[in-house]
Picture 1 (cartoon, rainbow, N blue to C red):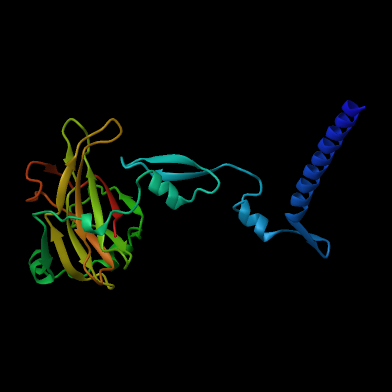
Picture 2: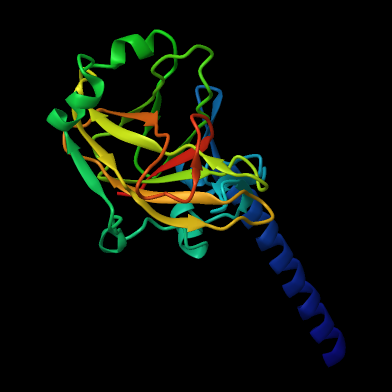
Length: 258
């Protein structure tokens, strides 16, 4: 009958579709791997499509959340790091929006010679005792200057990538009750670790405390050409932070802007 013929036709179509689907899956699976001389290799197109994640494991990014802490974000297929950055408004700060403090002062090597007298180079003695952290584009580093055990000239050194023009400097309060800050005189050194020029008065703003972090002093610094190192030595007082008590120890974060 017509009904029987229709049922038979539907069953046949479903069976054909199922078979085709199974065949397609099998073909896809088989095309993912090839055998050469009895050795199984992964097809490069399949590998790229799976984003080199054959086991289907979850992937995560650890990114700064803007408060001095890190947040973990699951990565979805097809979502690159740059897309995540755009979604979270983490893109690089535009060069035109970078502003230096009204109190910003550049100090020449001659100006600094009055402060350091015969000391002109600082790399050799430092590298014997401490590891020097490097600041590279699109990254940030943390430093925790500590009060020296003996009364001596104390300073911190950071190695600078030659492609960085500006950096952001954040110094966090020691506590909420009686906060003190590490606020330094910044001096740029050449490849040999000798003085090029210095910077003072670079504070742009004070960041209020949140539930997650202490208050912070924040400033932007322009890196002069041919600067290979940045030296920081703590100030007892500074013209740009006259209302704050300064210390020779603290927590700072330095981020490359451009």
